[in-house]
Image (cartoon, rainbow, N blue to C red; front, side, top):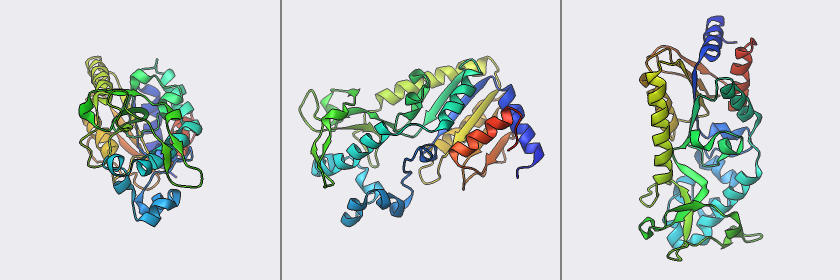
Length: 288
């Protein structure tokens, strides 16, 4: 049970906020049935074929596979494309969308997830910043080709039946070389970040306006891990950048501890969906 004072503080912040920042990591997708790939044991549970090869997540999620074994690289990313396209975003997305609508749609989403589920759930694509890119877009495996980024066509990826192998995968429309997802991978010097850069620029403009208007901001972080801590760092940093009545809420089932400075930071030790439901029930007068 959370202390009454904490419940009241969270309720007050949610009720009085003028602007909302939602930051989301891999834990946001778990309640939709998506894996978070924490550790090779969990990763191999979803991809046993890669366990046989002794290839972990940080090895397969690197760009060199698209040159050395594209059929294996696209087996991994193609299966994820298929899974993400079929899965429906969980109810927490709808709850958050209803909440930001109650704030005159004055919000921005920052996520490290590459599944495109915020847009799929109805969030404005112009108010989403995907820091690691998205599987919904492709690029040439050779960034210097100059063809740029294009919308993913799932029909260009065909997985072999009964094998962990792609028998068909997309090609670049300019050079004819192998295409890849427009996702930032490990040890990646080929990622084209222009799409994400534009999203970031829109967020920076929104943030400037919010600060200039001296609006009360609430930052809701959901499912951000510590192994790849991009989202945790962004949320904590933003908490220091918004100087007026900013509240930071971290929802995480295991790592919910928050910094002691600035004040106004609260940890909610719950899963993404459960935590969203609980804080918005508090907003409606419920109990955490």
